[in-house]
Length: 174
Image (tube, rainbow, N blue to C red; front, side, top):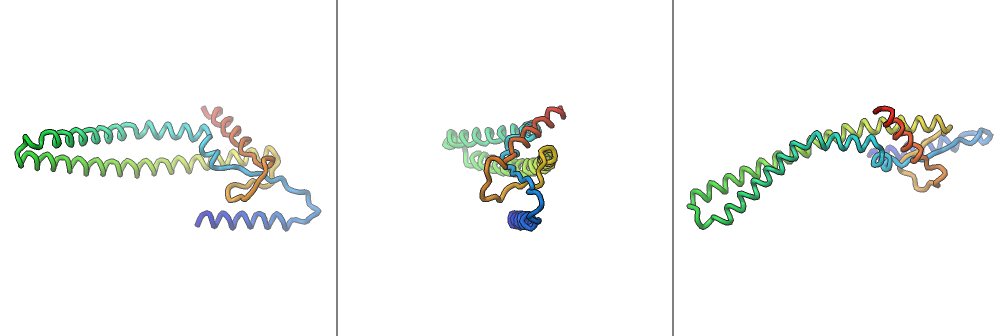
């Protein structure tokens, strides 16, 4: 649905550009690769490191829980013949409870991490759009397009200029 809305907006922008009087000076149009900016910006790298650090302890606890599960499975396999039926049932119940706990913790971890990633992505998008605007104003672009473009030449691709602006803004912010 969002792509359809973006496509309509793009078509509308291009249609409006075509309707400009022919006597008017041709506008300067640029293109940015948002995915590249999202992947390569130092702000994204910093956000990823921040999230990794924020969730490190929970990740460690889940890994520890998985280790306990593996150890208990090995204990049951190796000692099943030496255990009474009651001991075996107790160990199997303990294993089942550990697996449930691990699954639940992993699910909470993934949900919380996705929420945090989305929060950081929203902030990063704001930063990227500000950088695009700075470059567009500084370089005299009338229109900057992103995504949904069937073809563009390198001379209208300003992604590297925007990435340089993001790096500059990042250095100034630190």
